[in-house]
Image 1 (cartoon, rainbow, N blue to C red):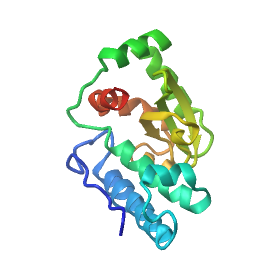
Image 2: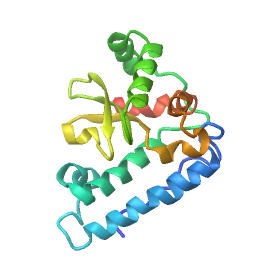
Image 3: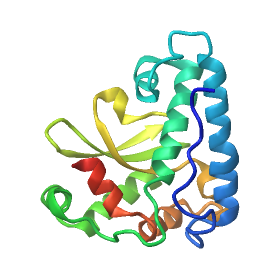
Image 4: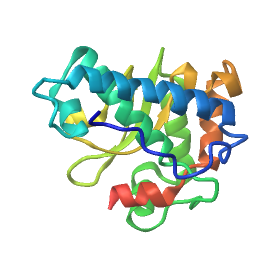
Length: 192
């Protein structure tokens, strides 16, 4: 097996009540593991077997792309949270947010709106281009901004399996709650 599922940097119940133990066990423990296991089977004996996961995402399509991107997206999603992380961004990232969106509250409003209005399943992303300009985008299904030459910084999962056990059909409530566990220190490191 080339790719392995990394251990979460917090206890499985540490994000509760925003993300419950049941959701973490199902979403990360089973769902994410399946993407990684399937990815490993798909790359075995192919040109992709020795590639980095990011390269597979950029160069593949179809079933291979879906499993590679979903494996990467879920790790990226779960590793941006902390029960005791930095609650607001600082430094250059905060400056960019204030310049581009007017305030942190306005940024959050726009980000939540992008997640709430995505029809069907997918992701809402904060990315940066080569100049450091911040971009909020929606990604259907397994889409990832790396395929458009952008650097992902933050993502909220808007597939129903990410929130249905805890929030049922209240996607907007789920999106709003994620700020409570988002660790801006992680996002700042991804930006710098």
